[in-house]
Length: 184
Image (cartoon, rainbow, N blue to C red; front, side):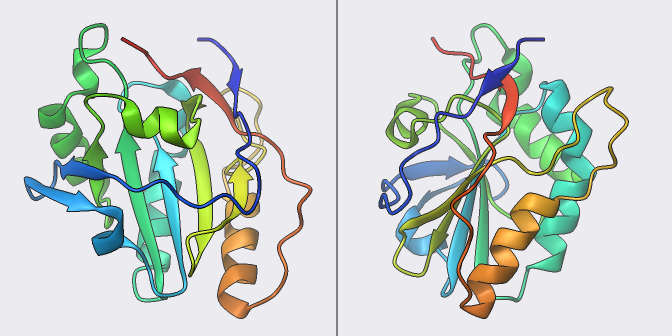
């Protein structure tokens, strides 16, 4: 299990566009179709990473809690299925159903979207405002597998709450740490 930190996209960066397969409904979907009226959270995750598995239930809760808030949540898996077949579309669809994800789970087969976002690890979280400008990038919370800190989503939830309330989001943000994206 490697410890790879986020690259920390510069705040204010505009979210790169994409057109990816949503493994839940089998359709190609663009960022413009999926974005939220008040903001958009893009999460780079995968099926096998212990860091993602550690927060999986909390990710599902996050999706439920913000389902009708004006915030859109989008998960993307960019891992190579050559080295990690369990991160492929069929397994992703199964994981989304089993975990109760209420958000799209997209497959970045070419890895071009991960590269455009400078995503480095799973999980890697990017929160954008209504104009798709980055206002938060970093960790879910301080919990990691084995550190005995409860999973709360404190960091991302605070950023989301501030965004939805029109309040400033602190620019002191901790990088996410997780497994490196499995590049081809």
